Amino acid sequence: MTVLAIENTTIDGSNVTVTAVVEDMRLLYKATRDDPEEWAPALCTTSFELDSEQPMPTDEDSFCNYLSDLSLNWELVDTSDYNLD
Image (cartoon, rainbow, N blue to C red):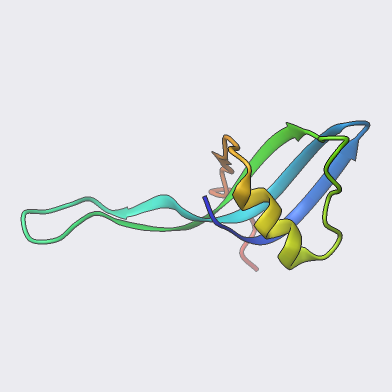
């Protein structure tokens, strides 16, 4: 999964929780006879353990690339009740 932008990062000891916009996570349109399904970026969250032997990047672009290279289980964040004002 390609991480497009970081919204929030929490580090608790060696545990990291990230909320980010991830590419191709939300189904926009189901496939039809004439067109393939279409996916869009969505706000997601994941957690993982830090690898003490690999330094974690400190700038957003490098951190997005770092997260994209990991095999993480991204879960959609329910934004249905977010205030859109």
